[in-house]
Structures are given as structure tokens and as C-alpha cells.
Amino acid sequence: MGETRRSGILDRVTSSRPWKSVFRHGYPVTDLDRMATMFTNFFLHLLPAKVHPNSLRLTYTWALGMVTFYLMVILFVTGFLLMFFYIPATDWAYHNMKDLQFAVSFGLLLRNMHRWAAHGMVALVFLHMCRVFYTASYRPPREFNWVLGVLLWLVTLFLSFTGYLLPWDQLAFWAITVGTSIASYPPWIGETIRVLMLGGQQVGQGALLRFYVLHVAILPAVLGLLVAIHFWRVRKDGGLSRPENAAPLTVASPAAEERFVPGPQKTYALVEVVSGTTPMVGAQAPEEELPSWPSLLFRLVVLFQVVLAVTLLLGIFLNAPLEELANPVHPPNPAKAPWYFLGLQEMLVYFDPWMAGVVLPTLIIIGLMAIP
Image (cartoon, rainbow, N blue to C red; front, top):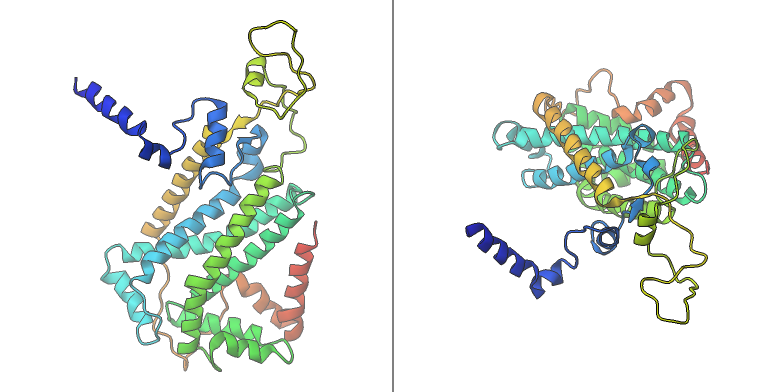
């Protein structure tokens, strides 16, 4: 009796006008409903209504793009929470790190997750680009999306670089000192660029405040916009690329063909009234593609849980480094740039600073964008 009453209340709620004004479609049970769900949902409309089975092969994409996106989501959430316990001032920043470590509930876990997710995102963006390159997924019509991917890689590097300074310990201070010194190598404008980045001649309060604003406001907004365009272009360019050696899909069964809703076609009917639909002329039967709901969405939900679990475990068992308070007088030996800029720092040993710090990185970026 109680179960029947609860079911009746639920039915009345879900059939009410306010409910339908929020949820335009019920739970999808047909292919048409599933496609309508993908088209009308604010969060799902960036995904295709149907997906090619070969595009779901883990050994083809390794889910690197979505893992990177999930790490970005984790970074946004943990970073937002960390902002409540951080003051971008040289007198407070390091002590805030200590408070997160010893005084704030789950503060150390949040910082650890943020740190490892940031390093993972830098690495996975690069690996995702390698996957796209080796599978030739940058070919027409996906050339522009490849360029967007290169820009996303650069923004990710700058995001990690600006966040590197915020702990205000020895590692952060001298890594940024070395990194910004590389930016001063271009002739005529190099020193101006460095002063604009630091807000002065050396790393101090001006640099910390500028890096903080870039890290929590400007660069995340740019990253979010580029990611949205990147996802949208994946859909508009025909979805994920498919393996060249994949077996062709079979033509859909008659039952699947009936579910397919083609564009306007020329039809013929007998003069007399007939039951059922009229025969369709010139309609091409669809391939056996899979509806994104639930085939793709189920995989995405499971993948997010895996990424979150791995990040959580890393945050529990591996603490983010925190050295002593930044000291401009006593540099470590040797002073190193962040790990993703170590290549540039090492090239300074073998090449002229202008060549290693400006010419070669610029040529690499232009070369990557010109690959398509």
C-alpha cells in the first residue's frame, strides 16, 4: 500500500508542468528519446547523439582526452576550495600552506590532489597530442581542432607555471626565478616581458599577486572556453576519428532502420488508403552506430570514477612537496625550472640563450600547428 502511494506521488510529480519545464524528456527508452536527450540537455549537447563503435575502443584512444578533461574538473573544484584558505601575500602564503597541512580539515588532501592532478594534466595533454598525431586524427576536417589542441597544451603549461609560485617555498621561488629568466632572453623586449610578469625586477609581492590572478581567473577562463570549442569541433567534425584498419560496420537491421528518422524523402503510395507507412525511395539505411545514451555516457561515468579514485589515492599516500620558506639570499644548488621546462633550461647549456629560449620554442610551436 505504501509503495503504491509513493509511486502515485512520484507519477504526479513527474507529470506536473513545473517538472516538465525543467526536464523536457523522461528517461529515454527508445533511440529517438536517447537522441533527443543528447540534443536538449545543456551538458550533453556537446556530445554526439550516436557514436561509432570503433571510436569506443580503449586501445585506440586510451581515453586520454577525457581523462585530461576530468583532471581539469578536479583541478577546478579543488582549486576553488583552496582559495578559501589562501592569501596571495608574501607574508601569508607560506603560512597558509602550513595551515592546510596541519590545521585545515582535509586541507593536505585537497592540496595533494590539486598538485598531482596538475602534473597529470600537463603530461596527459602531451600524451593526448601524441595519440592524435600517431593515429593521424589531425587530418581534414580536423585541422583546426589540432591547432586548438596545441593552444590548450600551452595554456595548460602556463596554468601549471603560474600555480608553481603560490606555495612560496624555496622550490617555488627559485623555479619561477629560473623560468622567468628564460623569458628575458628575447632581444629588445625580453626584459620588458620579465618585468610585466614579475611586477618588478625580481620575484616578490608583485609577482605573487600577478601569478595568483592569472592562475585562478584569467587562464582558467581561457582554458574553459578553448575546451568547450574543442569538444564542439570534435562533434562538428564528425566525432572521434576511427581506426583506418577497422572493419566496416554492417547495415542496420530492418528494426533499426524503422527507428531511424531520415531527412525528407520522396515517397510513393497506392491510390487507395493503405495501412502502415508508405515505401520509401532513395533512403539510405543507417549503419549500426550506438546511441551515446547509455553506451558512451556509461563509459564516461565509470572513467570519471576511476580518475577520481586514482587522484584520491595519490592525494592520500603522496604528499605534495613543501620546502622551507622562500629565501632570495640562499638559492638551492642547482636551481631548477619546473620539470616541464627543464628541457629549455638544459638547452641553455648547449645553445645561445636567444636560440634556446626563444627561437627553438617558437619553431616547435609553429611546427606543431603546421602539421595538418
